[in-house]
Amino acid sequence: MESEVTSHETYQKHFDPKVYLETYFAGESGLLSSDGYMKFMLENMFKIFTSGEVQGDILINIGFAPTIYQLLSACESFTEIIITDFMDQNLQEIESWLKEEPGAFDWSAVVKHACELEGDREKWSEKEAKVRGTVKRVLKCDVTQSNPLEPLVLPPADCLLTFLSLEAACKDRDTFCCALKNISSLLKPGGDLVMGGLLDATNYMVGERKFYSLLLDEEFLKKAIPEAGYELLQLFTQSHNNPTSLSDYSAYFFIHARKQTNTS
Image: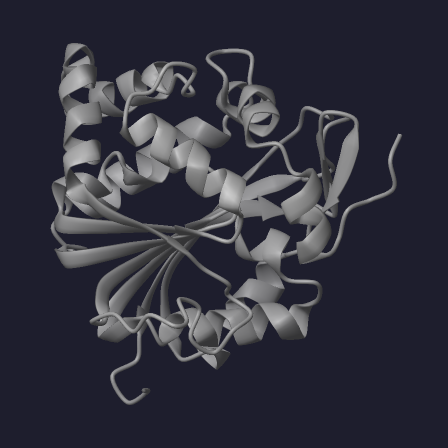
């Protein structure tokens, strides 16, 4: 087995998005599709985006993984979605799905679940088309930079989404807290941050290679979110009780926070 991958450079070199997606999100066999994570996230996103509380013109997805499940409810509440990711290969994988290229990852099982929550499982192809039509740009992003989209400067977004990303991108808790402040620069005052991930994870496997994950716990998140200039509105957790050799997480979390209006 290869040694644990921790640096951004080695992520760029060794992270295989296709293996990652097959391992964690494929149909009923992917770990996060089968262990309750996906159900937990889709249900919380459905509630928050259909409530009318989180909506607007521009939504930016801050990524460190080539996923689209977090956009399935959000695309109904925003006119423009901008997808960002740190890794070139993830951006290519996302573009492949957006363009419906041969060999693109099959998200249909997850999309059907999201449509079932909205009342009609059979509208999954319309949902995929809605996501593809709402995504306007796919951009490189580095959350460790003060302007994560440098050299671009975009109009501030109404909402930021970030799932399973900051804990992979940040080497320690100080970096994580800085990253929260850095992405805040992309969000208008009073804008929403919707965030999800795993608790207590320190690593995860992609193929035969182990990748680093920053350990997050509920107590730390309750402190870090307000200190980064957000009002913490909701923090939901759900325990995970099925041990796996792929990762060492113990629970999932879902956060809704709002950028304080007295911050830049």
